[in-house]
Image (tube, rainbow, N blue to C red):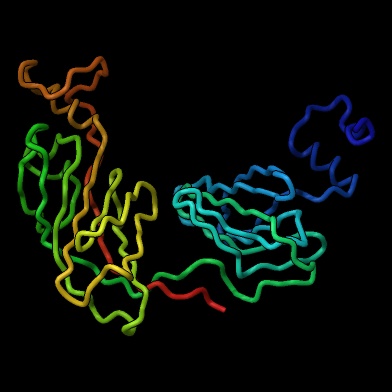
Amino acid sequence: MTQLFAGIAGRSLDIEALREVFAGQSIAPDFTYRSMDEASLDFLHRTVDNSEVYFIANRKERDEQAECSFRVSGKRPELWDPVTGESRSAEAFKQAGGRTSLPLEFAPYGSLFVVFRQPIGVEVQGEAKRNFAVYSNPQEIHGPWAVSFDPKWGGPANVEFSKLLSWTARPEDGIKYYSGTATYRTSFDLPALQGPHARVALNLGEVEYAAQVRLNGKDLGPLWTKPFRVEITDVVKPAGNVLEIDVANLWPNRIVGDSRLPPERRYTHTNIVYNQDTPLAESGLLGPVQLEVIEAKVR
């Protein structure tokens, strides 16, 4: 250790100085990546028993694709989704020079665990071209949408949205300043997407801030981060599908609305201060809500 850091004695321990020392000792970076458009990824690495566990995070609010390289070989890479808890073996990867590289894709501010634990020969290579499905042929569900708000919090029990837009863009004060959960309902027929055996996803587009999806009475779970997408292959019918989406926003809009009311008519009582000039936060299901074909990973 003394020899390792001798090269930076008397110098500040900045990243470039450490890189020089490690390069001088022929120590390769633990994790590197290449992208076409200046991605910003960060990582953590922990050894757990005989497994190497990497957590990779996208630090930008945009989709990213990157070729990621890990200082690991002789173990099959697995991809673990921290949002859904699902895990699977990577099908696209290369091993060379004591490293494993594989193409990864990230949602805005998204993240992945890459786990190396199952031994394989160092000569084994993944044969696929990518590790993630492709979503294609989007078909929009136009509505109209029947929307139910909670009257206890000032919203209308029933209203129709001919198109999706932020609650803050509506003229009704009960919707503009609403905070809480509202339920969107509509029905649709399944268009001819790509053959009778195509896998189908529902993409909600933009949601402010979280959603719960039900299709034909089946609860498909919460969606609280981008992409707001869920597979519906086993639930969707050729015709007469009933879609329900609960959407919840945050509290500031209701507090801003209450600042316009006399105290006895307010819905909230808090020491948090917002006033009439505080900008409202976009809220609700903004869409577009689309059906998409899930294509298999390209080989």
